[in-house]
Length: 196
Image (cartoon, rainbow, N blue to C red; front, side, top):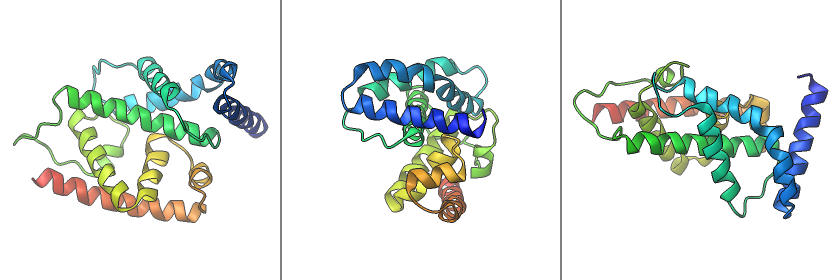
């Protein structure tokens, strides 16, 4: 997609989100086909990190996330990037809940220590690793919410530095600095959890 078409699509998504927020239910019907492809890309990105043979498929993850997003009330949709950031966050929560339901939250002597860089590599990951990363990310959100948002937007939603800066209303340099510090902080916390 060229830059002009991307700007038009982003503007269209933003306009549809604002219309939907204002109560225009037909805007939701028009929004679905516009965002579906990007939501599938985010879902595929998530599923690429999951273990082989995961029972959830990207299309099921997209559908579940979209159903939950439709039920969220009171969200002040800012723009296209904000929508996709919340979508990615919803997908992460679905996968973490799924992993917890499968019993992945149990810790045992067979637990393997995983660095944050390992967890961030696009390769099959265990449910327990996702749960550990989620727990560390929740701790980071309590200490520094913006840094936790940076991780969600960059890693989980796949937003660029510039898109992340727009969503967070900070400079790209701040995003890069937060990203670097967040990875270090999360790696330390995941190391502590694995040592327990």
